[in-house]
Length: 102
Image (tube, rainbow, N blue to C red; front, side, top):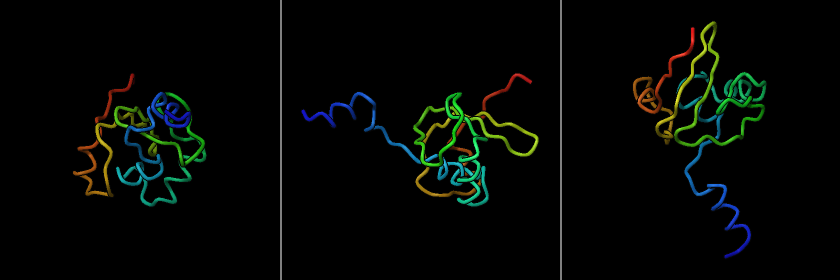
């Protein structure tokens, strides 16, 4: 087994993943992909508790995202990765909203 393949298997690189900016746009947390890229690059979003500062970070199923939207903060667990931008109802079938400690 080659070194690169062994590392990718250890790191779980074979699991399906999607860029965080695309996911935010697909799930309708951003109106445009450019807006999603800016949200990600400015550090407004958290992935599994860690601040995101790059739009190219990969999100996998069962990851937890913390997303500010206006005065609200949404904490979601991604069930499945969408293949494209769906309707609002379709997008909501991809994640579960977790309760926050308000």
